[in-house]
Image (cartoon, rainbow, N blue to C red):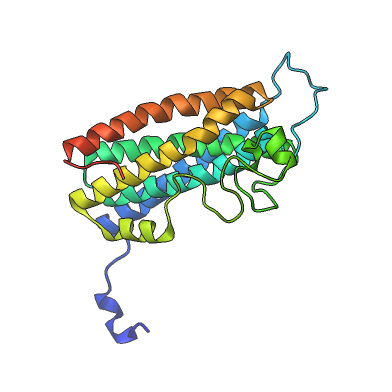
Length: 235
């Protein structure tokens, strides 16, 4: 409880440091919301002039819906890790990479959630399964999948313990562990993006998945070079 007799000793909330911190927090929050809303707006424009408005929307068990649901979840953890790096790293290269990843993936999440809303589908699978949409027809008929489902994490996802460890590090140790986790995260999601790029029904979703593959492959190579510069190896 605050001692009212000592209130005159409390730091002034309107000093330069306080105002700077508050302003920075407001700007970052506003930017995050703006990027997410922009992505959602783009997603809702999926039916462009010349497209077949009479075509059926993707079904709940389709590649399109499953990819949008699972990749949104996968991306949001990437954004979470990138935000940690933005706040804790003092390395300019790492901070810039983190900013780029967070900005790009937030916009893509907004786009995918916009499509799901337009298709009248939930943002997450109601069954709680991951990557069941990657099954081929024969495997699906027998109840099998080509990837882990149910409560199993998607490939590349960091555990709660790993995220806690990341938050507890600093300096070069932090930068190296962030790069290792994010590299594994990128590589883990590549199988989903590749499958969607080949099998999704919606051209815009296939194009998004293909762009993800290309951009994240480039970022992965860059992260490997940053790890090498820091005398570290991928996980």
